[in-house]
Length: 253
Ligand SMILES: Nc1ncnc2c1ncn2[C@@H]1O[C@H](COP(=O)(O)OP(=O)(O)OP(=O)(O)O)[C@@H](O)[C@H]1O
Ligand SMILES: [Mg+2]
Picture 1 (cartoon, rainbow, N blue to C red):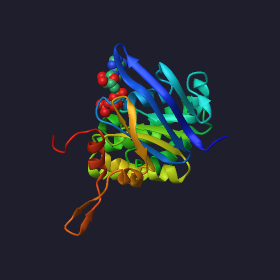
Picture 2 (cartoon, rainbow, N blue to C red):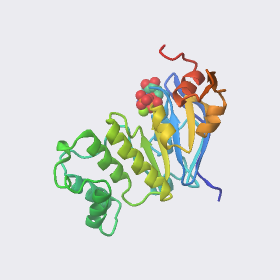
Picture 3 (cartoon, protein in one colour):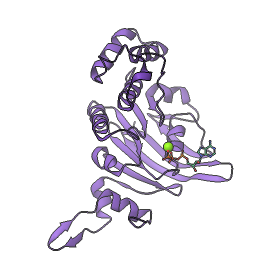
Picture 4 (spheres, helix red, strand yellow):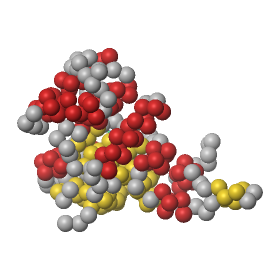
């Protein structure tokens, strides 16, 4: 066994004539937080769908927790959970009922206790018995992430976990993600928010025009760009500057 939770090699995927992934390679260490960065339409969700067995690649391999997504999808599903880009909670049910439903689907021994614990952990105890249709966006997102923790998966996939959240709710989600990684869970997230990757990720990969065009720790990415000297004050490039530079856009363009 090696120390990788996820290993991806030469991943290719087209939708009809549109080639979205043109040979994507990366690896994610167990217990780390990995951020896949890319603009709208870069193919982030496509990567997530392939890694979570929802979509088949045209070629290349993806190994999740030692299992090949193509030949051992059931094993992969046992090891992972996915919080998709769009909230998957059931509006008509209460928060508590949503969690209990998933716990039952996963055949867990004590669904009520599982719900109680997760509601507490995510600060949803008070709202637990209200229909989700009355929840704010931030509460919905927290519930959504709590659902993906039912059954304690080894690897969790979060596709744009904080898109549409206000800064406060975003910071709450960041804390949840950090806690998860600290407790040994591997986190794979996609984001368009460079600050999010900067705050959370142990390693960052930039997906652009079908390939990973840069990857590494934040400091490795920063080293790709010499810091500019501004009147004796050394200015570190922000991840945003690095990102725009790598994908070849001028700021403000
Ligand atoms: N089922 C599909 N059929 C045809 N084209 C698709 C399909 N799914 C995605 N695409 C196209 O593939 C490209 C990549 O889409 P994808 O959803 O993976 O991007 P993304 O990086 O997740 O974007 P966003 O940041 O907007 O969520 C886009 O051009 C999209 O229109
Ligand atoms: Mg997407």
